[in-house]
Image (cartoon, rainbow, N blue to C red; front, side):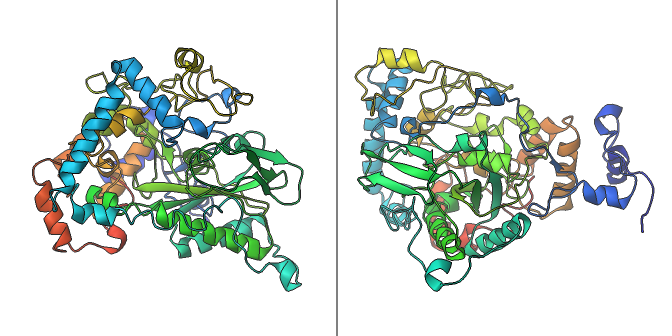
Length: 530
């Protein structure tokens, strides 16, 4: 049975009482649903059952300008996380920008701050907090140096039975169900064709070993199997038949204190990774993934965005229609289990970021969308095609290398400078400016995410109304950002040493804040945004 009629966005907005002057006819005239079947069909697929206003895009589309012809694989040895290679490059980049000795000066200031903090037992950097924070990575080194290879489990072959067989759709639903049971909050699936496979890094950042694809029945590793940071000989081989990727995410606490004290996506994500790899092996399939640390195998944010978990955003990660910025993208596993791919989405999030700028305004280090120029530089409203810094696909890489021949390059015969623009326009993030202030009068490193307009709960129907409007028109973007601040959501004060922080910490440790499980109040935080 069909209930025929038309329901345009304009009519929907009129029914909510918020359509009126300033809303151009073109911005709200489409889509028009002729019957309920059309409305239902407008929703994304079964893995991501978003509200109807979240539009599903084609496989290689996403909500920022992009040019797939410029996509190259990334060498993870050149990231800020890689202390034996990337950190030296970041230090040199900071010295180039701000004067020789800047990196050492910042490092000395932070060391002095940390030492002083430990002498204040109840402060943010005091023993009470720091002793607890050292536990959030538990599980990160689980089974080290394994991780690329799955754990040893009983397989169909050892049991003398056939392996599991299901359709790609059945397999995707099954994997999602198991991941949610294990603690993941969302998942994306991809078929690794020539384009998608480029989001697997060329080299591991722990030991510099390359990831290569070969025509082999199972993956394997050559050379030393030591995950300690530093160059190692050998390679990690992925079978060509491993044509699918599973990218799972963890929900973070949207509260900056809860998030920074636990940051569970690292330790817990590692445990979920090993569970997933063992499960896939038990079904009779390949399961290769990150070594020791969840971020060093693939470009996880790219997989999440292209798989419909989230959209690109102004801050350094991505934003989910369901969890807002409290989305910890955790790990990607490569397998030969056939999976139905999930598609990118448009919920109006990236377009909202053009006008909001709240995360960039509040970042004390000036790390967000200031073109790598630091605090005081203007915030770029428009995304840029040209990345900044040696931690990205950076067009100035060749000149940088020529200026700094003293920075050790591993495997020089394999090393290639990246000397081209990025494959998409973005608001580029400067981890150097973030790191220089982390721990010194800062937001606590998740201030940008916890204060994001989308990282709010679902206490009020107005949140649903606003999300629908954001997906339809950008007219009210600035107003919604202002409204978010005016409502004064209960977030802890900005700045580790800012006013009220000690009181908030004391309230947390005395349990008067009634901390929810995992620090996540599903009604107030990490809900459906705004």
